[in-house]
Image (cartoon, rainbow, N blue to C red; front, side, top):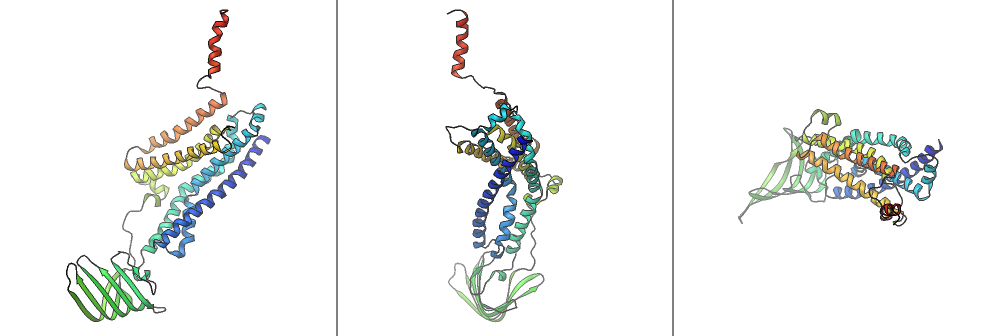
Length: 374
């Protein structure tokens, strides 16, 4: 049908252009944040692009919803501005009749958004967390680059190796400055190597000197050694804490219905429901005000999407702290917005008026006077 094919063709062009623009903006922001994390030593600089890919993939459900929303509003507003909507209305199409072609175009995007939020989002979070944790779980000496001072993972030691022996976990001219609760120590050695003993990493130093100073005292204790060993970390440390809710799969959230898990589940379902509601909202809000210019309505729509998305995040926090339950939040937030959008759509479709204009009120007020001959 010409009516549906023409709309879907224009929607596809607008959606593609909007999605490419938003992905470019998001990738730029993610790149800046990833470089900042790499400079702080949170992630491996060699994994920057991989970390960026997983981070952008996790944000894709929101980008798909926003691109769909903007594409629908911009296309419908253009049709209003060029009087195409008037042509369709005079040919027998109603405003509600636009729901069918819009949803037929949006169905693949809605399905992809639901898949991304339910499956890809937790998977991408697990991948980024694994990259970060594997880099943080390195031994203290694995963090050290020859010729550079490097702080340990606990923050109470500083290491320096002048030259590293190729192919071995050993180095020459080792310097260690450590701060403990009661003393400060500086250790230097001619050479050192890493060995694993009883599941822990030890740095064995050879031919060195150690200076100790008790806190609050000016006395120094100087000792020389032929061999000295100090623990620098575990060989394979395990993350003992429970995994975050955003790292769990959707079936795991359903099985273990804690407050944090239900809040994460509500957020994932909310992304899919938000995409559905945005189709109805776009049709209800799309219009053209010649006095406001072309971008006036689009700015209002973007603000509406930002408010909706913030309410979704706020609802997630409310469930986590126990202020509201899972079911009432989904019904109240998404059901309420859907009801409001449908009511506004039916109002525009039936030309309902919330209040009569001043001219019509004067005309109705004058009718009894005319009938009485006054």
